[in-house]
Length: 439
Image 1: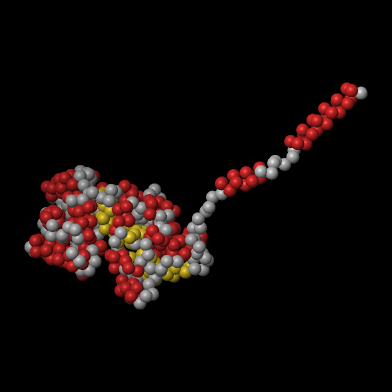
Image 2: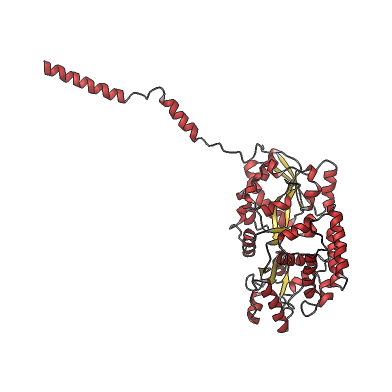
């Protein structure tokens, strides 16, 4: 009996232990589990910033045709995700934008030039307030869009100007090599002259804007001889345009631009040859010149005129050797009305995704870091790498300094190339600079 009794007790004890192991956890354990789950929750920011499907954004820009198609391609993922409705208007006339702003009915967003950031600074919204991803831009890209310490312009589209176009096939046939320093470029120019070749095609005729290609060339020389801080000093007015450094750059430029042994047609050719014709003279058969310094758009000009030529073999470019940083033009996004939909647009375009999509659309270059490595066009891949790795980016003087500065600078360049007094020409531009900047 005793053995049977203790056997029953043992079985009962084992059964009790098993049942206890199967019971729910203590009352405090669910609370601990909930707390752990709460810690793992991630708050996902709304990419549409509260914008609702059907919300509208009015846009004003200068693009049309293929350029407008590329912009729509870039914005398509944003439109699809947020369901916003874009109301664009295209015009090349800045007076239309002025009229809208003065009437109190500006577009929500305008893509325009850097000078308009200064012009409209009192009615524009800060990119920081709008939630732009400033970390995706180098400071020297944000700097031109910062007015009185406020970041007002988002750089969205860029084109670099500090490049020289040439024919690799012609260089190879004549034994020329691409220079890597300014001294090497100068030596190459003299070697071409000694061989009976004309080094440069420098035509600048462009109607009322004749002289702008000379302005670009001189600014690149300034980047070589003085550096980007000097150029920004000219833009701010801290350095007067008749400074000795500017005079040195003009004299370097003038040696080539006014002499027929250095450029097609000498001074007369520089003044009378259209800037697009100047590009084509380097790639004609036979070529009339060996090199042309021109912005990134020159490749398109060559391809349109000579479709049988192959980029990389028959036409290519190299950066102006010795230049400290790059000169370039940019289109700037500015915001007149702060709405959830506009904030969502800013967040998208300034995101790494926005930069990558801009590059994939081949709509020139994007200053956004997300563009690097995402270009698909061979020329843009090379220009994009230069932009991503540059140590500085200075905007065009004439596009940046307001008022009549640009026209005064072009007139001075034309006068100088035509044999006019350089000191008098520079003094006239310095006066226009001082007036425009209130110095």
